[in-house]
Amino acid sequence: MDRARATTPSEVDVSTPSVARMYDHYLGGKDNYEVDRQACAALSEAAPGTAALAINNRRFLIRAVRYLAQEHGIRQFLDHGSGLPTQDNVHQVAQAVDPASRVVYIDNDPIVLAHGRALLEQNEASTVVQADVRDFATIYSDPEVTGLLDFSRPTAALFLSFLHCIPDSDDPAGLVEQVMDRLPSGSAVIISHLASDDPEVRRSLTDMMLTNTQGNWGRVRTPEEVRALFGRLSVVDPGLVEVSTWRPDGIAPEVQETKEWIEYGGVAFKP
Ligand SMILES: C[S@@+](CC[C@H](N)C(=O)[O-])C[C@H]1O[C@@H](n2cnc3c(N)ncnc32)[C@H](O)[C@@H]1O
Image (tube, rainbow, N blue to C red; front, side, top):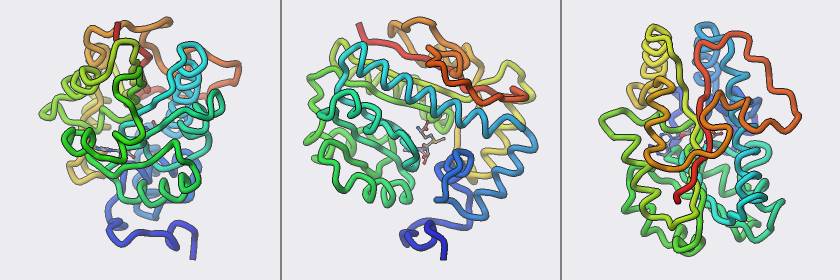
């Protein structure tokens, strides 16, 4: 029995690919199933750079969290659509700068909760909550969240490789705005988002993901549309870019041989 199967919570649907488990597979993780690996194989055939894109997105997350902790003294992180635990998770990066840093992970996939709880058992400054990010009432009144994060203090809201899971009908820009409205001046947002300038790429890869997730996804957007998600927040240098080029730390990015789609994004502050 493999490790994933040994720890599968009963409510995990192993017959439909899950975004969290597909992403885990792309990152070299073990918490995924045949159905996820097949979906990844089909996606990689249509867009061969996807595995490199996932790795580069994850490295962007690490650099951006470290930047906010080291250079701006941010000590609270709210990670929306956090995904399965992997290497260098947000709390590990932030707590390497200051062990008192607090992190709340939010994801609606039950497998994230199961594996996250196991990882965080010994970590009193971090927790994982199973919730739909669109459900503010649940998240902001959850004692596990309010017991850990003090929303009168600057907080970083993370939306990494997540907002493309949200359809236009659920207003992803409004989601970011509502979260930032609840946070004080000096708070930050990190966003990365699947994007392409090519309408045919956007259509075909969106269709594939909608089929994979049985309609439970958003869409690939244009870089301009991703820019709009930042609203009136102040974007820091180097602005919004393909994320492997955001404040590089000397570790060479994975070569994304073809760029059918990119992870596009950056970091911004609430003035
Ligand atoms: C591609 S993964 C990104 C993981 C991580 N943020 C990163 O960039 O490394 C997207 C995650 O968003 C989660 N997700 C999708 N829609 C969601 C929703 N409405 N509420 C909460 N989580 C959601 C998925 O379960 C998945 O774990």
